[in-house]
Image (cartoon, rainbow, N blue to C red; front, top):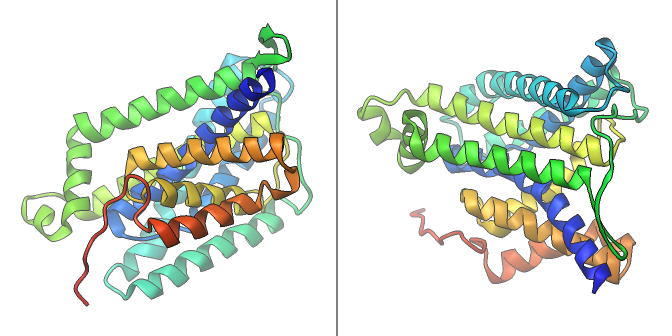
Length: 300
């Protein structure tokens, strides 16, 4: 029983990070019907931005709340700027092109960022700065609730509440929902579609920035290819919940984190990465629209 509770805590902590990154995928897809494969590499750039800023200011060995907040801001700003540049110079010129062209461009941007990262940052892994002291806050037999898990959960909850407020309680959020529903009608109603799409990329990229700091805090090793695997898992989480559905991305992320942790705890850790592919295949076979997604009929 205690082992199960510990795996439950670890799975929710990991799944919360997957959910954050999956939200970036699902937001862009909801607006443009585009799978932004470069999203995971934006996440990688956010981790390195936080790493170098921490070293520059000498706070790489000064864990605390202020360090966490500073690195979150740095990573969010860096990822937002990069996401805006990708949208403006890679995706916007192809907006009226066939979807296959945009998809190939997204894959190309992803590879470009990965190999540029190896040139700029170096191919060798680096140790992420100490963000918080990983103290044991509560014990129950073998069950431990650590400060890292509590911090991750709190940051994710605050971020998701802020995102929910932005989308459902602000004019920008109303415009995003209008563009997601029908771009042409939204433009006729006075919505600046280009600006709203750019804002969507900024918000989605900033979520990846938050996720990069949380992952670096919990698993302190970063490298230019770090986004490859976690990006795949976050994408599977978005598809699992129903890509384009915000609550579906959150649900899919939690399910992915819990499933992965249970596989490690009760089966074999060597299969944890293969789980994402298995879940993706099952979802595409039995429920292609995802758990919370709705099937749509398209005229060809």
